[in-house]
Length: 250
Image (tube, rainbow, N blue to C red; front, top):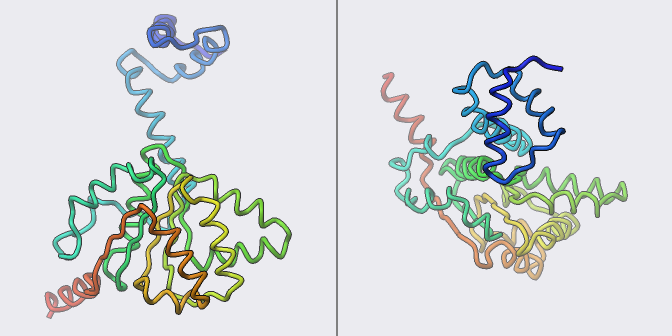
């Protein structure tokens, strides 16, 4: 039995009771374990925050983002195509709650992936289950799953997350089989869970990625119906920053 101050346990149980929560013997034991490292009542009030922070950290880790990105770190002054107010509204995750899609379209270096990861991170912090993947990696995984007779299970796994973030859609041509498998994932999620994509191609250029025109049209329909389309433009602020740094050192 862990050693913990009795008044702290009673305070915790009274707090639960006041909220109409269970206080049976199992909860009492759990309270002693939980509070064994809490030295005083002041620290008790930090417990909900600490638990929420740890849960957020676990959801962010589970999302498998390749790097950390945040809305706060995005340089809106460097990209006149983006309305900061619109992006901050998206950061409230109302579109995720409503199971709507999001498309980020623009050339390389315009902030698509940054925003995709940052908005996905905001969703994870808000309590949503998020998964990030590159389009080619997702398609390759689906092809392998089909070959190993576990496609249904794999599609269902991607269907369960609240937000699926697909990056670099349009960078490489997909054969018909790969496109059809991706379409199955999108169909599984349609109007049930959100999808966010980042693409360097406008929708008109997607026929080079999805060579079947009818399948291409169906995929565009899945990714745009009722959703948000954000165009990040054609001017690479990443390249502009590099040039500015070079000029500053010369």
